[in-house]
Image (cartoon, rainbow, N blue to C red; front, side, top):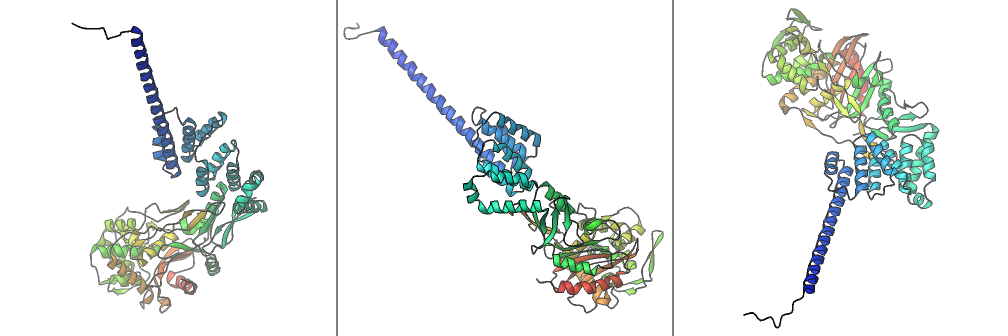
Length: 555
């Protein structure tokens, strides 16, 4: 039996309790919603910051992936759209970037990105087109920083008047706080108005070339060098280049070439920096013939042929040279009868074509082609920022006669003066290769460096013993009583070199590649004298004048 006498019951109390429960649930849902919104907002903010960091670090692909998987379109929308436009700008998608910035400007969007960091990045890297595009977009928001960077961008684009107008619009406090940088920019604008800007310098900061503002072209201040590729870079955005050249040495080489035609490259070891690049071609080729004009190098190629033979393990010595040898239905000739050739070192020192025919046959065409390929023939050459240095070419087709001619450099092979100097450097350093380079560093319009060359050595071969044998044979070219450079016997510093004499358009061309001093090589070089005569005579006479100049160079 149930007793209800002490229990009170009311439908009104029940409804009150139900309302309280519903209110509690509603508050709980609202709280959960606020937490979720906060989490989404934090995720969006974190995604924006991460994408910013990636763009500033130049990691475009990763930044693009972040933007494609942005957590929510509801938060950080303006930041997200500006990041998209910046990503397009960094990736070189100019129309997309311009459209994105235009839409943001038209909508009056306010963002919280680190705009100053992006402006500084574009300036530091000399990316003036990007700097101008982004600073122009930011100008609508006002403020000194956007106007300052816009002034820099206009000056770099050679618009001195526009740059000065921006400088005049800066606040007095900003001008005072940045007085040194403002003076630098104003000085550059004065140079633009004066019509001349020195912009290419040698290793000692002596001007090598000036930009003629009115002509829009480069004016060389040293002979034997073409600065047109640098002028093209300057027109795209003002910058300063420091090269590895020595202006004083370049002028002394010019005096040596009076009455002579050809080219000369001198590399400073171990890093193969280009100390001299002199071009005075007899016809065509221009001032950069040393870098891109290919020619038949003659017996210079024999240093590579000798290495291929030594590595093959074959032995064809001693052999008799009678001045010619039959090969593949033809005849290979020598300049003289060498008689008994005891070993491969004498074959190189005396440049015996007959001996090299026998050596090429013993090594085989595949071994010779493989070795030429290792030494950059038929390869892409070398790149140095916006410069390209061509390498040599050789023809793999043909039978026994072609093989003999290729091994001695008589036919089927061409190279540039720079390539010949790079070969000499390789043998000087026992197979270690530093790609030759000319641009040591580059700075933006305010003198802030954005590029510095970093040496990256490569080991072509680890066969030091055979490299040593070739080096010794190159030294014997000078020191052997019948060597092709015997006219220079006893000269100091001790020299190792290989000569080549080839028929050119104006007679015999003298070609020589080598290095010095022999014991601790500091310089590698290659020269071509067009129509001068035989390398063992005209080439030796030129070297006799050149070596004292190099010996006087300070370490």
